[in-house]
Length: 339
Image 1 (tube, rainbow, N blue to C red):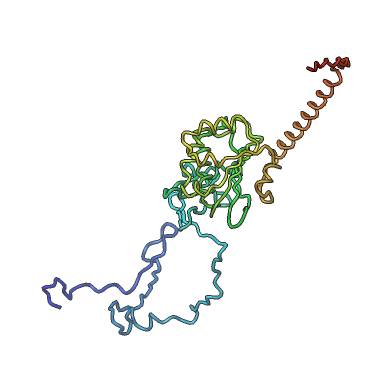
Image 2 (cartoon, helix red, strand yellow; image 1 turned 180 degrees about the horizontal axis):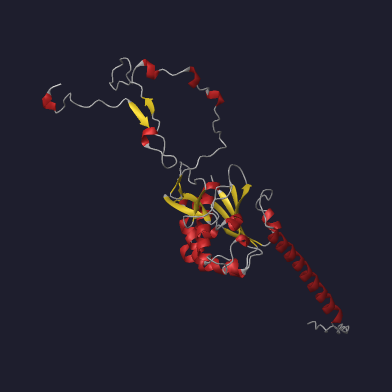
């Protein structure tokens, strides 16, 4: 090689052995009496050709038969196994073309012990949904006690005309902690559930019975729900049946007229018992809360007792009324005949 390249042949050859000295034992032993072990390094050619001793030679590329791997003996994960990647305490989010992605766990404060299910003890369970071409995150942990507020009640008529049941008795009480945060996430859950459950025309049953006023949703919440619902859902809604209406829910609907269309108001109808509701929609798959069933039975019993009491009062009034004396027959007036 030309010396102008800065490389000469006067370089020291690399060592071919490694001297290992045992560690010093007890004091008083001189270094001259220590035994030395010499490890001889194999000769290797670092050139990139396939000459003898090179890294690319057949001696280094060949593997022994002892290293053969039987793929059938390797345990591979099946569909039920999951692979979790944790980076800085945050789980990776995977999304597909569906509007609602699978739920995922994420710690609230970035720390916490992990239980057997993979959720943090002090964390949250999140669900990512797409509403109106916008992505939202729902805190499923905080609304878990209230998810029964909306259920699928089967189908009616011909086709996929869904029956959606909204049970107001499952709403949170306004006196609970973080009420507005719960209602905000519950609102997103209700709207996203409608988009998943509804394929064609649908009907909503609003179970208002056995719901105290403290659990009634406010006008602003109802207004937000109405405005957030997609135009397709508002158009495909055929009827809103309110079971066991009260003066309060009637007042709320009357106040809501300014921001609700006339077509939507015309779709509202009231039923005062579950028997009347059964005349409108099939009840085979409609989930009626137990408290609503008891409320309906109590109202029927109270109505029956009230009717019986009114009937007894009418009978008592008829018996206590004085009898009118028989009127004497009046003499017939003489008729004057003009001759």
